[in-house]
Amino acid sequence: MLNRQLINRDHTSRFLVTSDTDGWEVREEQDASVVRVVHRADWHRVERDRLLFDLRARALAYTGWVDD
Image 1 (cartoon, one colour):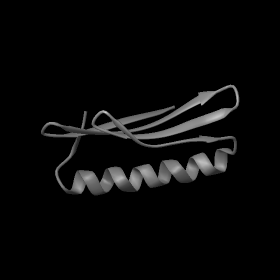
Image 2: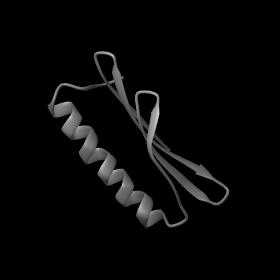
Image 3: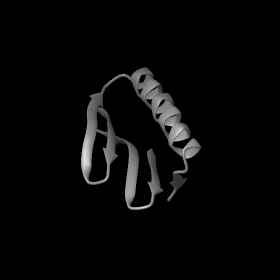
């Protein structure tokens, strides 16, 4: 559903939203570490998470990160 990855030199930041039988998994990763992972059953909360991811990705892009 959503798989956005930004890179800056040797660092990566990834935003993921995947669906499963019970709803959606929302995950944020930095390099090889999981920063945040939540399970959502309500699509409206997933939409808010996606907006937050978009804001974070824009902030990273503003500081020189690029989409991979």
